[in-house]
Length: 357
Image 1 (spheres, rainbow, N blue to C red):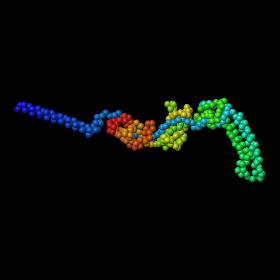
Image 2 (image 1 turned 60 degrees about the vertical axis):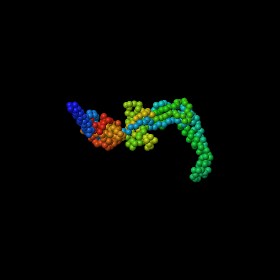
Image 3 (image 1 turned 30 degrees about the vertical axis):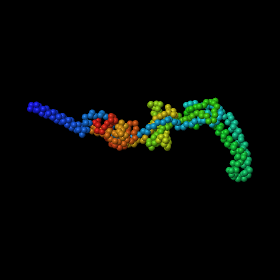
Image 4 (image 1 turned 60 degrees about the horizontal axis):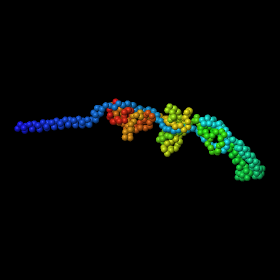
């Protein structure tokens, strides 16, 4: 009987231990379920994320169109030889400034002068014959002679051809002297005094060094914001500190195959710039009043723009519709209101309702 009692006590002790284990497990599970049902309790246990904030303000927003391009002259002309001959004088050299009307080069005109004189004599002699034959048609009574008769008499007398020969000789004589059609600087000089030049040879280039443009390409989505006279800034890539002021001078009304529009900016005081230089440019678009936040406030989540606002110590996820942007700010069209506080740092990994400080 004593043995049976010991076995019964042993079984009862085992059952009591199992009941205790079940009770402990049940309490632990209830606490876990309580935490799951109250996520706020979990968040309050996390250390707040330190952030910086900024106010959403409504103000004049300055938009800048950024682009790049090259420096080109306002006026440029490449000079080619129109005649073949000996270059008697040449006063040009690379980087030399010449004024409008100034003589740059002159061919030897001895043969051209003789050709011109012969053309003048032939023109005079055939002119006498033409007048003599015309007297037979007018008969001295002042009758009007038709144009067709005049042309026939000019051809028959040789006077018509003599007029053309004289014009050619005069033109060739004039082309023997090259003068500057505008004030500018010489470049790409390929000849010198004493050289034998063939018709069609390239001689030199003249460009307006004091009037330079920046030719840049603008996206067709931005071209509607660009207008003649708008201010701009030019930044040569060869210098980290040089800044030139400019204005929109010309807009080409054609969009190219890449969706770009050519815009020319006229540079003020272009000293130090050279044609062909690579530059960056920003064009200032007129200001308009809108909601503005720092660029750092906007993050992209799943392809959508998101801003976190700070409300009662928690980060609140807000979808927004961004508009234009400049170097420091973004225009916000929808999603937040003026006066709200937005988070501008440590916001890349923030979650909705995360504690922040």
